[in-house]
Image (cartoon, rainbow, N blue to C red; front, side, top):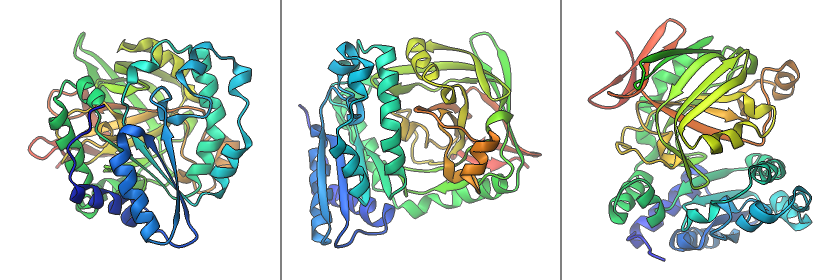
Length: 391
């Protein structure tokens, strides 16, 4: 097990951002769950120390390397050799812990992603469904996700370990407030817009695609470190049935140890009716065929962080890159609707066990050719990789 070179000063700053910026501090009586693989122990320890120094309590959950994000009953062995009935037996103490915790921190970073190979699609889908109620409980409380650099992830992105580490750590210790100016113009325009139009092209055959969706009446939000760190995006959930057309997404996206790249989606009246991928199509199929909601689009977002100038296939940094857009296959965000219950009844939002962010680049050479919010066209400044309204 190779550990990245991260200084004590960097670890303390990183932990402080998660606890004091993302959460606004923790206090006596709080119970903070900290979850990550053993390889992330230096950061786990730094967070735990600051939690205890603040007078709160912590519960550290070490994720086994063969369990992607420590999903309940989600070990590689269960996903290869188990049954749906076994997966559905959720220990009561797991639910109790989720109900009693006050804050949740999850640290991404896989030590041995090859252990995910060989899992059965129907079992992976069952694991996702069983975990959805627990995810909903976590998301009802203060939560934040971050990424620890691992040698396996560096290899997956074709980088040497220290270079990868330097990129990840530098992006996580930047001042969160420095991201705000690049997001405010997009947010203000989204808040008064009714419709999003996205035009893309597949460079292999020059096929052009056009995707439209309605966002009027939703609640766009700025992400500046409250739930993800690193961060930098402006997002909302579209009206589920309004999404229509086709889109190509060029950026490589790693999910459960598998890279998906070159995604094509055809969506009719809100439902994904056709799909393909240049790489990872079988995994994409497993995600989309999970449930009815995984055939729909649950998010539309602009990536706005200009400090992320290298393509990393882990979704946390990938979807934040300045000059990108992403959509999510699956679950809508209930918080993006004024009345989530009414929105669900009307079919304006949907639920799913899945939420897979897939990304397209509008930087030079990327597949995105046009993005419109109503009559305002947004373009990427090639000098800064920042989104800006076209003049």
